Length: 170
Image (cartoon, rainbow, N blue to C red; front, side, top):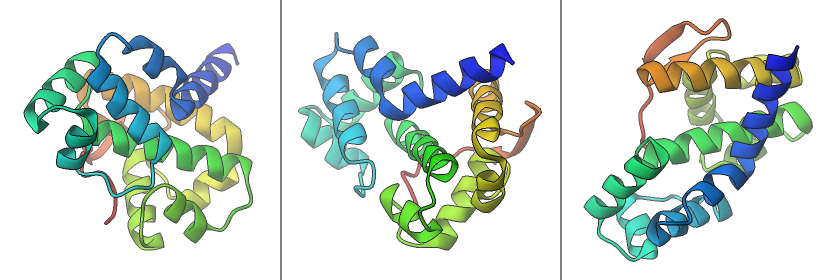
């Protein structure tokens, strides 16, 4: 029970960005990139645009971001979008198309595919599972991503291919 609560809290903090933003304020450029991602997650970010908005080159942002956050910027963006989607699916009755748009996908189909890659189940199944599914998947996903960089199922085993840091279904 405690693990589920802790995993849910981690997922919700990551979805709001509070823990990551505070941890990386030492590098202003990374902090700016995180602010842009968190303030406008549905935007069609590219590494080039994110770097320009953050005041550095693509290669400098990619290297500093990865060193500070632990993953490349576009992979972080994708994971952040999926956590936002998980929260919306678990805590709202918004239609799937609306959620897809709010997290940066132009089609429900692209969103559903990306979500299934991330969570191991489609968004409709996730919605039926509610907050418990969010907690379990956040814990499994977090552990598996740290260890392997692969998508995790609810039981913590890696499934599917490696996550792609493409930034969303655009």
